[in-house]
Length: 533
Image 1: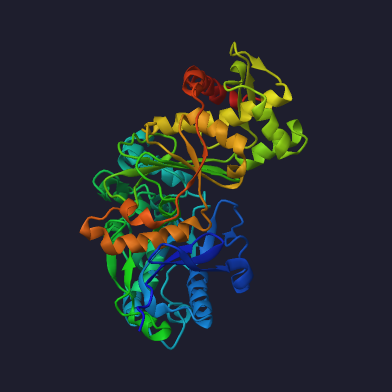
Image 2: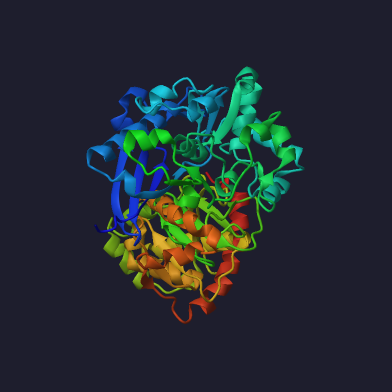
């Protein structure tokens, strides 16, 4: 009898969907599916997978919706004959910064799940808070200021935990719950992130928070990888006990719960590898290596950076690297992404990407000294708003010729990304690669500007469902991590990225002084932005 092919599965509990991706031992995708929360679970009455409360600041998602989505997707897999018995390891991810509050006694329920019933029925009484605060929640400004004050300021907190205090970060969410509902906090036996909560459903026990997702809480000391006692005390009493210890992101937590063995036919020896956050999982899915940059050019633009020696700042985030414990990843997010590009396309290129590309081809690198900052909505990094144009003499001007406007937009977007990455400790090296994904990554001229500004080759990758795919990869790596094999060793079988653009020989000479000017003008834009009519 031929040997059955091993499978490795990644689950992604994202904001709007639960996605699953299975790969074989050659790292090829063999199965994928999803459950869409609004469409497939209408009884929870979510919009975009969330409940936005009357104050518009509080945003939550139903815990039982996540559990029921897992019931549903496992039943779908069973109905199409998915071979659960061939799965050697499972890992997964959850939307970062969401938190789940297990009621006292829930651990016993997890340990004794009856396979005759779906999980959402067995666990419906296991939570003290039925709707979990998630990353979209912005109701904790007072708690953020209190936490920063407790450690001596925003920069001290960033240096300790990787980020200044953010409203969506879990420590501040916990602090608000403790302050507003102390009796609920007292009834809480364990606090999970969405990722560790999801892992618990497979493990049949409380799953530990991993270093990478844990570093998005304003609670974890990113250097020592232990909870920061000062931060814990500033948020709520006895918090360390309710969180449990943080663990490496590649750790095997144990074998799958007997519940899943009996109900679905999993191999009892199937291992559960620590779950992590969606951004770290995407780093794995995009197969970043030391020195790489991943640039996602979508509705918002996102940078993932592999950094060995980070310098945490008041902008951006530093997380522990999910695939190599002694290194770090940085995350930078920009609101003014594709919508800004589309507006300039419509105004300056006849609404045509072909004309947009032509404008980039017919203008020169450096744009003859013309620089632009384009923020239709208040930007995250830098915190500025409005459109600001400067000529070669650093004088503000009201408009540019259309083709100059197009290049000023693209050069400005990419120079900002490089400057902010370098402020977090990133260094362009000879082996640096840029891995580009998202809608704009199919535009050759845009990728050429990206390559020239960074002075590095740009590769494109197919990253459909990169978070769940990344966790399937992480499941493979988790089984061999203790043997000394690195994540990149395991990834050698994966499909290679395609070279899309290489920097022009004169690019570094052109952009070195322009980057310096852009950085100096950015400070002026920040101070002037809120005075702009």
